[in-house]
Length: 295
Image (cartoon, rainbow, N blue to C red):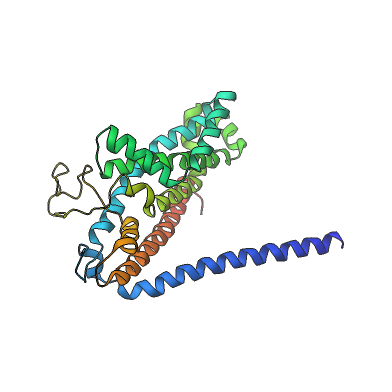
């Protein structure tokens, strides 16, 4: 068998495997959407959940998921961006930096349940934060930070060195070169990293079971005082997210319409993640074109 036939055979096998993976993914998403979309309504999206009666919704859980997502990104993104810039531009090439990079790779592969147990022991028990949104956000920061840092560093590294050298040749400082030349070019990759991290955060359940809790206290959406126990903005209250709610319904739900609520909540989770990804890509490309003055 000559090299051309081997190349065609390998291409065909790889294409077949990719097609199988795509088919499985589309089948899974299609099944969730087909079974769940008929149960979605405005009442379902805005009403609180019910533990024993039928007709409950996912309003509180949906808000908790978005609130936890925003709070986690507010904590993790500045840290990851600073760490990525430092490792890319300022960190010396020695065994300490290599050890840090290896540690980041190891931490990025930790199971979420391990991060959840770590967060439970440290934040819930030791720091006495209790089951709260803040405990969940900090735990997800540990879960999310290694991948986000590595992705940001790779996005900065992918920018051609000629652009960095051009910025320095114009008299820019290292920080001005990063901010005005490298960062705009790496912005799509950075936004992609944030999108991937946001998807992991929004769909995470195992780590939040031990940190944010499995209960959804009654919220008063007219009360925006973050220190009030009934306020939706209170970071010290327990918060059942959408992913945790789906797991809880399938494991111990006793309401008459448990299967319908689970299917509808799963479809909402898929739709929100897809909308977030597409919207963030569109926004990232638009910001990139505006910053770089490209068409």
